[in-house]
Amino acid sequence: MATVSTREWKNSVIKEDEINKYLIGGKDYIDAASIFSALERQKNPDVRMIRDILQKSLSITTLNPDETAALLQVKDPSVWEEINATALAVKKKVYDNRIVFFAPLYCANHCVNNCAYCGFREANNLEVRRILTMEEVRKETISVLREGHKRLILVFGEHPSTDVDYMTDCIRTVYSVNEIAPNSGQATNIRRVNINAAPMEMDKLRKLKEAGIGTYQVFQETYHRETFEKVHPPHTLKGHYRWRLYALHRAIEAGLDDVAIGALFGLYDWRFEVMGLLYHTLDLERQFGIGPHTISFPRMTPASGSWLSNNSEYMVSDDDFKKLVAVLRLSVPTAGMIVTAREKAGIKKEVLQLGCTQTDASTRIGIGAYSDQQKEYNQESEQFTIGDPRDLDDVIREVGELGYIASFCTAGYRCGRTGETIMGMLSHCVESKFCKLNAVLTYREYLNDYATPKTRTIGEKLIAQEIGEIENEPYFQQKPHLLSRFRSDYAGILEGKRDLYL
Image (cartoon, rainbow, N blue to C red):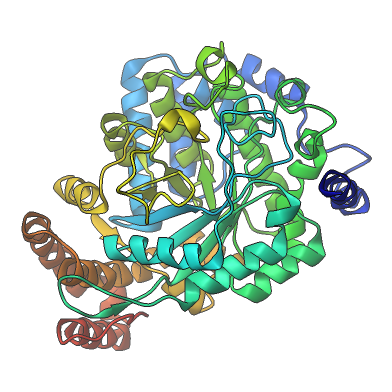
């Protein structure tokens, strides 16, 4: 009976009419011939043209395909130095001097798909299947809160037992949890729950909206259709290329303000995938007036029982990885950029200085792995291998040594700075002003509530520097009410108040 039920569920998921309305002349927005043509045209880009492109990116304007292709084809190391410096400058203009932290929480690993690179796939008999109960979700949330996190992204396989109703139960459970911070004894809670889940029909997406979802994240994995069909068997839900390709179009139409795109680098040529992410951005902007809230670019790492995850001919080197990060930062300057714990600490440190805005820390990807930390988890039986398992405090200290402040800000989402509003503020470099204020406030909370003495010493110096910049920033001098409110909120946090934001 369970098998029949699963089959019936699979047959009900995809709604062709929720794809076709976004097509243009029956075609989707990924034109492989056009991508290959642009890359070929720009094989030997002129340095003057590259510098013009960099200036356009500094004006916080999405690049076009030829401009992005030109950046991807640069060979001269000295020009890459200019590209990298400009990428960091763009990040500074749009997001200021902070790195946002979050943690992933894997709620279940049941899945009806058979993706060639994933340990969750249905045919993988090495994977021990588990679905967290709401009590277990609560325990996991407590464990994450004890680290100091304020943002979670919940991760699910695609399966009827973990469909939208289970997801909404998880979201509400996470939001209901309160915990006491170890250093200060202050109450703390998760303030934003994002979702990494399969594509859904619009009625289900509306349920996520009602439950208080933050960002809805769906990765296309690969934009190259032939490769997509090879690694996602055609009889599976994930084998439907266009259902996934328009997952975020449906989400925006269903009322979800913030959507997140990504590709799994290592499945196909990295330059093609960067172009695919740009095309995805351009079509969202064309149809809805807003681009992705974030872009992720995980590299494929070894996964349980997956031959492909160890043997792909398209594995991305560290040098090329740094290039694709810099180009994405320049091509879509308003998007947040997420480097994950798949990366080892050394390379993660480097790309944080190429314009990334978010990262996870204290990451555990086993089901129940946060609250069961006494167990020795065998990464070979997990969805993929992580490269940076360091605790949150260790990563925050390293980021501080680089001169960045850690941010746990969720203010924009609760103040209505989402969707079209935040995109406009990002493009005009206004959101960065609020980012700076709220980053300082949440960093102050972390230093008081969780930080080790060494991390706090570094943080105190950074906060003094940031407050000096705020006090001398012309924008705030022209808006004294914001400066006054910030001073009041900062003093309030020192006195023991929490979750103050502008």
